[in-house]
Image (tube, each protein chain N blue to C red):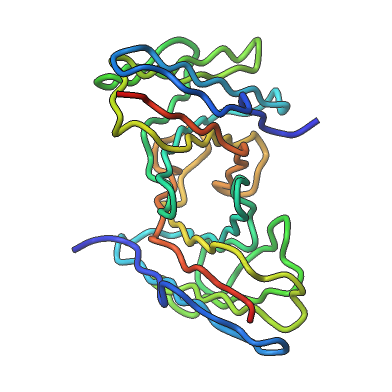
Length: 113
Length: 117
């Protein structure tokens, strides 16, 4: 089992719709969770981080964390063509030496005008 | 401007050559990291350093070496022992926070694309 798994995609949604990106992790002791966006040929940029169970909202983005189910998701409301990118889920586990992130393989999102 | 810089943007290596990728940050971050990304894949950790003159192997350290002589700099050398080095190399940095704090957020440089000729 991979340490961090994301829905394989690619995911395609129409402009204005809600895009839902999902991530599960195997280390039950994981504490910190991050979503990065990566445009083709570019480096990842941080969208959100979440540490506590529940929802965290930032503009059109909402991160949801359920530690009991070992599940973290990212919702993008009112999706725009500029949201088309690969979204990477990353996790830091308890006991990890320092801030060592484990990444999923990413979900490619396309928003169609 | 504060940020992380990587150079060169593109690098070509001949068989048997060692090449060094540069990473510099002026964010006063304690920790620095090197990742490798292959097409359609996530990021894999090569090496990381939390303090000057100390570094640890990541998941795929074989064929790579690093140094951390200054807080601002963390160069990566791809040696001839790395048999398949063609990839996108990403450097990141963060404060040395605890795992529950926002200070452990990693920020990435623009990357170096290495191709073996």
